[in-house]
Image 1 (tube, one colour):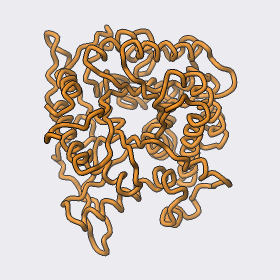
Image 2 (tube, helix red, strand yellow):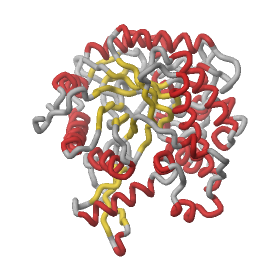
Image 3 (cartoon, helix red, strand yellow):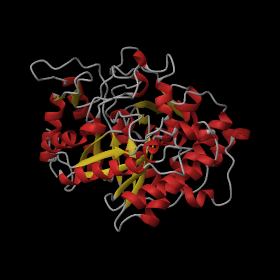
Length: 447
C-alpha cells in the first residue's frame, strides 16, 4: 500500500440526519420531534431557525442522490425520523412515513448507493418526551417496538444498521448542559439513568437486526468522542491517554463491550449510579459487527504523578473553526480508532462522522473555495491512514456532511457541507471540497 493509499474495498461515503435535512416537519402525518419543539422555544436556536423546511430533502431526495452519484459517492449514512413513522412513538403506524423511506431507499439503489441506516439520530417523538422521554424506561419499550418495525419493514432494502447516534449528546448535552433538545438540566442520577436507557435501546436495535434483518445484515453504534491524544507518543503518555479514553466511555462503550459498568464508574457515581434490572447487560452487550466513531476534535493528554492523565489547556489562539468547540486536532482521527481497537478489541471500525463547520460565504460564479475545509479533511485523513498502516481495523469513512443543513442549536449559520445549500432557493452548489473528496474516493488515496 502506497503511503497515501487506503485498503482495497475501503468504504468511502457521506452522512446526514433526517431532522437536519428533510424539512416537511408536519407533512404526511409526521408529528413533532423534540427538536421541532426546542427550535420553537425562544433563545434556543440561533436566529430562531427551525426544521420546517431545512434542505427540503423530503421533496428533493432524488435530485440529491443524483448529485451524490455524479460525485462518485457509493455509501450514504442516513437516519430515519422516528416521529415520521410512529407519530406517537409507538402504536399507530404512519404508512406514509414508511412508504417515504421505502422510496428513499429504492432511489439510492437506483443510483448505485449503499444505505447505512441510523435508527435514531436525536429526533425523539415529542409524544414520548411528554411522557418522560429518555428519563423513563417506557421509552426503551417504545424503541424496541420501533426497531422491530423498521427492520421488518425496511430490512429487505438495508444491510447496514446503526442503532443510536451519539448517546453523549442526547444525554449530557440534551439533559444536563441543556444546549440540545430537550434542553433540560437534570440531576446526575437522572442523567446516568438516561445513559442506561439509551444503551438498552442500542441493545434492542441489535436484537431487532438479528431477529428480523436479511441475511448478511450488520449492526453497530455510532458514538462521539473528544479523543484523548498523547502529547508525546511515549509509553507513559499513551497509557495516560488510554485511561482517559476509557473514563470518557464509562457509560457507553465500556458496558457495551464489557457487559458491565466499571467499578471505578460506580464508585464515582455513588448514589447517582443507574438502576439496573436483571438481564439488562445481556441485552446491552449483544455482539455487534462494527463500531462507528464520530470524531471531530480531541484533547492533549500527558501522564502526571502515578500515571494519572492530565488534560492540557489550549492557548486562546489555538487553531479552530467557526464552531468554538471544534479545535483543529488531526491526531484525533488516529488515536480515536486506535484506542477503541486496542482497548475493546474491535475488529471493524468505521468513522461514521468527521468534518468541520465554517460560516461559508455564498458561491461566486458557481464556485466556493473552501480551502480551510479541504485542508482540515486532508490532514485528518492523513492521520487516519497512519492508523490503518499500523494495523488499526478502520474499514470506512463517512464525511459529515453532504449538504449544508440545520446545524442543531447553531441553526443555518454554521455550514458543514461539501455542497453549499442556498436555503432561500434550495440551489445546491458543490464546493471545492466536494470536487477534492470526489477524487479521493475515486482514487482511494489522499490527493
